Image (cartoon, rainbow, N blue to C red):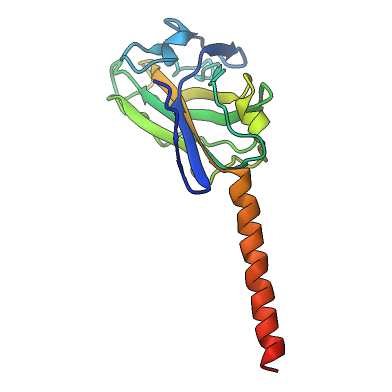
Length: 212
């Protein structure tokens, strides 16, 4: 479901929005299957990667989504980006499970900025869980314009790895849906804020001169 968002004064949001383009960056050891477009809707139909634990490195290719359909107004200030991933690690026997490996935003079709991975010790639950990467004030270590967000190649990249290996069993990771929300301030509101800040500075300066 793609949310239109909301606006309160100068601050506004768009989302959550789901992707319509899905790619797999084959830099890992194991493929996502079932197919990868299953990550486009919350319907308990998953895209899955299996065989994550073992002697072969135990990590997946990067699952990448884009074409989110944002329409952020021109000149808006981007305050934060949040991607919500509904994920789980299906039970496959023993104590094996999965974890984040690399989790990054995508700008211009390329992975950029900070890695939001929670680390190998933070195991995915066997029950479907919504995990938020980013937030209302998180830009992922880079800068954004409305054009970057509105572009069809703005998106998200995630890979999974083995978290706990019991020496025998293999782990799987599954993703139901990935959606995005963007937090921003309209350009007109930004201009007004500057005006009011300048007004306050001048008022205080005149008071100091008058009472000197």
